[in-house]
Image 1 (cartoon, rainbow, N blue to C red):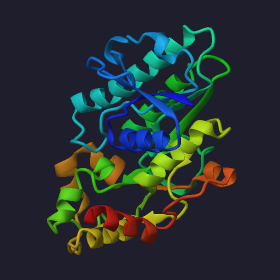
Image 2 (cartoon, rainbow, N blue to C red):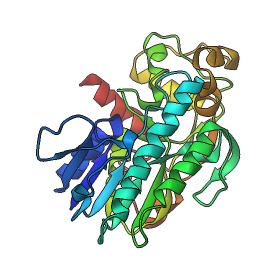
Image 3 (cartoon, rainbow, N blue to C red):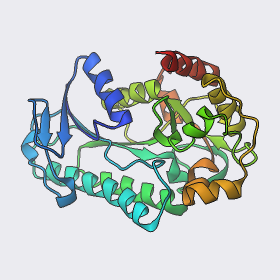
Length: 299
């Protein structure tokens, strides 16, 4: 397959590019600098500029564009960046598809577990109602923008949870604390995080490129885990103690709105559609995930 990808240089994009290439696909990366190889194509999503020729003949488009959610505290300016860096590229891609007589058959456009809001009780399946807050509103609009792809295009919006990786990702602000031995359970630690390893994230997205699934898909591990269990596992991976509980006020002081909507979020998300489709995880349980992280950390 010929696959055009935005956001290919990010943590998830890098892993997915390798996965797709390993599977024998040709991956064309959209870049904002001058292209340097035949597998790159320059675009300017901030200006809505993309030559649709790059999509002509492509089998699928994968949209992973977006500034890092957990990279820094959420000031008003940062929230604007989070929004523009997602909606602008998505709109640019769907507009380019609209200009083609035969657009790509599949459009995978990333979304987030934040779609469900910061704190929800019970299991969250793909048909659960959207939530509020910054991420709830942003994710809902992000998905709506993806659905402006031309009629007949299979649109998939993966709602990704917390991606476990030694390189950071959504855990970026927290890993330095853990590595210094200063991190512990956040808040009461009983809130559920929908987690997935980076390896399984790449595997799931590659699966969705070819699987005949349409619409929202919860991308997380099948085993639920609360923050107490996840932080204890991460502390073990980094060989650091994690006994000191970090109270909510301290988290809000350091992380701002990021504390309530990501760190303190309670989302017991279930990957119902992936399970029904027969997807197989590499790391379905938290012990599996931590063993993989330990191997990654040791390399």
